[in-house]
Image 1 (spheres, rainbow, N blue to C red):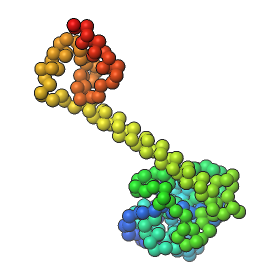
Image 2 (image 1 turned 90 degrees about the vertical axis):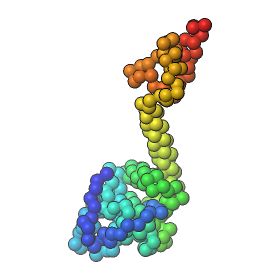
Image 3 (image 1 turned 180 degrees about the vertical axis):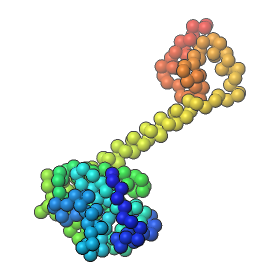
Image 4 (image 1 turned 120 degrees about the vertical axis):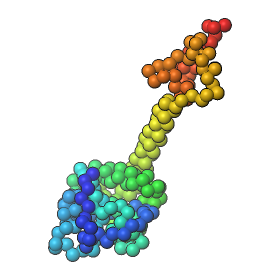
Length: 228
């Protein structure tokens, strides 16, 4: 991702701070532009349009032009401009790759904002405009990459990212427990277990607060039986 934020006070950066309750998907309506080209257009003195976006995506890059929490004029609705995060998809280059990049970004932002796929909408849903035309208009859809396809890819990315985040948090919790000191009440029992070889430490110590695996349990049971 490339950060190329419009300067503060830019005529196309109205500012403000608004919670985002939806994500709005657009396409550029330009079959030749790239994300960088679209970003340059926002600064072009000949650009008289009152329109901008938070993110623009092509088949190789994602450009961030307006901070997520700020307003962007993108959907013809004051509520949508303020409370919906806008993502533009370029129509040039490798269509499938551009849509994949947009789906992944949409999934990341949805999870970050606490949104579900039900809060991912089209520009069309705000104003009836034929946008994103590459996903909703048969004249522009390629390789059956339509709105349904896009949402399915977003949901797949969201599921994969959720699983990854859960795994990272779970592993972090396990690592945290490994370093905790044992409770004082178990001192005598721990001493007995260590002296009789039932509990054997490793490079991380005895790890008394760590969860016991089945193989560790089997080893402890076998050592206990050998004492009898």
